[in-house]
Amino acid sequence: MIIIMKQGATEQNISSVTNYIKEHGLEVHLSHGKEVTIIGVIGNKNLLNADHISFMKSVDRILPVTESYKLANKKFHPEPTSIKVGNTSIGTGNLTIMAGPCAVESKEQLITIAHAVKESGANFLRGGAYKPRTSPYAFQGLEEEGLRYMQEAGKETGLATICEVVSLAAIEAAVKYVDMIQIGARNMQNFILLKEAGRSGMPVLLKRGLSATIDEWLNAAEYIIAEGNENVVLCERGIRTFETATRNTLDISAVPVLKEKTHLPVIVDPSHSTGSYKYVPSMAKAAVACGADGLMIEVHNNPACALSDGPQSLNFEKFAKLTTELKPFCQLVGRDF
Ligand code: PEP
Ligand code: MN
Image (cartoon, rainbow, N blue to C red; front, side, top):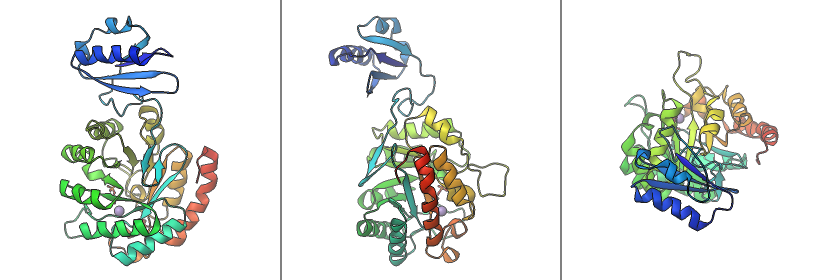
């Protein structure tokens, strides 16, 4: 449940409520909004006497929170969250563009791509160093060497950097080299990994699982936040449906649904959701138009020779054209880009 304090409630009024809750063995989450403070209660609310709280001075009203995710819930935290990463931020106001190759293949390749995407307006460099491939015989990534190249490319261009992690060892390595970690679709419900990502204190991009409902996805985000790490960004990357014309089906309606349910920023990946470079521009525009805070787009210097996901990667020219075409969409929704 949440307790909405009256306007003008003092620190002392708030403390008497939070102390009462803590004395009963529950935890509190405070959200200081522009006008009112909201106290979120975490734990078994049957241990509390809600009437007792509602009679307390400066308590306006109490509302139930029926969803199992609390810290990710917009009811706990009505203001949208903006997450600072490097010298950029993800959330309200600007459009985040994470662009780069599916996999880091070599230092030269990565530096070339980093300069090209920066030139076209990207603020993040993406690149996989640990690749969870469908086939065990496919290229698995350069691992720590790949992370080092990401760090070098980030330093050289000023772009923030993001890499997928697939294990605790990968998290430990990634914290040394990149600005943000990514939990991929295949690991969205790897609860041990989610907890470790939470404990790392790094900003985390959590991709939607291949067959995950929005509710399961938000509970996965809750695992990270429950470790004391509120820096979570959600990424819609398409889901499994009966349709085979595209690699996955981009659930574009997930964006407004998430905007209603959570305060966390939401970005869209039009590359993995469609599986074809041809559909990336239209889906990227749709994502911006419906309120996404950003995009993750695969870009390669030579898609035909890419070691992974070439068919869905944009070349530099197509990426530059897309970012130019995105500008009027950003203006329409009031985003800086
Ligand atoms: C990726 O972004 O490199 C990736 C593997 O994506 P997903 O987890 O969405 O399949
Ligand atoms: Mn990929």
